[in-house]
Length: 329
Ligand SMILES: NC(=O)C1=CN([C@@H]2O[C@H](COP(=O)(O)OP(=O)(O)OC[C@H]3O[C@@H](n4cnc5c(N)ncnc54)[C@H](O)[C@@H]3O)[C@@H](O)[C@H]2O)C=CC1
Ligand SMILES: O=C([O-])CC(=O)C(=O)O
Image (tube, rainbow, N blue to C red):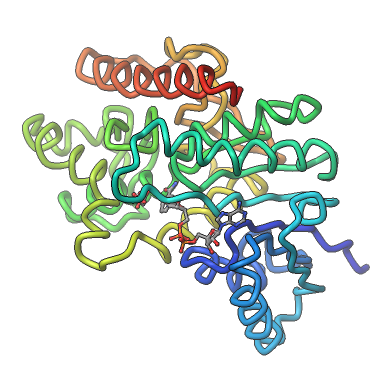
């Protein structure tokens, strides 16, 4: 039986992350080794030529699952029939730009894209926002798409989750595969909170295995939270291959499910769980099954975690107020 190809739209397709992402989508790593895909590359006019070059290379890979590539600078065409949308293209902060300017510039991107998704995407559309500030950009796109169920708009904190797994594995001398149930809470920013209190290392409580709150507070948390800046400092450019890898992981898990007994982290609209104000797009521990995610309930939040979750949620509330004041939501 031949399956109908899944339409995957990637914005910012000619950028760094796009270049690391598209080949992996086309090879079947996003959705599965038996799922054909059709790619839609959405760029701004200046990015179209480079996107065409990338499309030529995609052709030259002769990926058996790749059933077509469309390139456009028109959001209505780019999201037409989209089943999965990866919103990667964003306006980076440039010299002299205030946070409010950045939010406003990104509003000019994510509001029309949200509307185009609302009007043209397939009914089963799933959206992942990667472009920063990812959580609030997702909120802007969601607000512009009132006909799409709000929970389909998600923001990427999987890179933070993977960074935390790797740091914890290095500290405790176990392979990453031995660690389960780690959580990133809050915003994809320096206020995010990587939580090991419910995590398990080879079946034992991770906080007890580490047994060093000073290391958690002064080394682990800031290393994970500031990793993006450290990569920029070392590489002279922001994380691209690891960000693309996390985007693949996020969508793959959302569509194909979390492993039995494990969970992952996704930026999703809050339903008020764990005291996170309803509607904010904040990172939570989630399980996924049959293309639907659910917040893990019933975790005890200790004082150490509570103050850190609250600080990140406060930042998200401030970002929401700022985009509300700008009329973006
Ligand atoms: N959530 C996360 O964990 C991470 C997020 N990021 C963010 O991802 C974004 C992209 O990063 P890179 O690929 O390295 O940037 P880049 O600057 O290399 O590429 C961005 C691309 O987006 C395009 N673009 C700009 N406006 C657009 C629009 N309105 N429609 C379609 N395309 C548009 C640009 O032409 C460019 O080709 C940045 O905002 C970055 O901060 C990066 C790493 C991790
Ligand atoms: O800070 C950036 O632009 C890149 C980023 O989000 C990260 O690496 O986590």
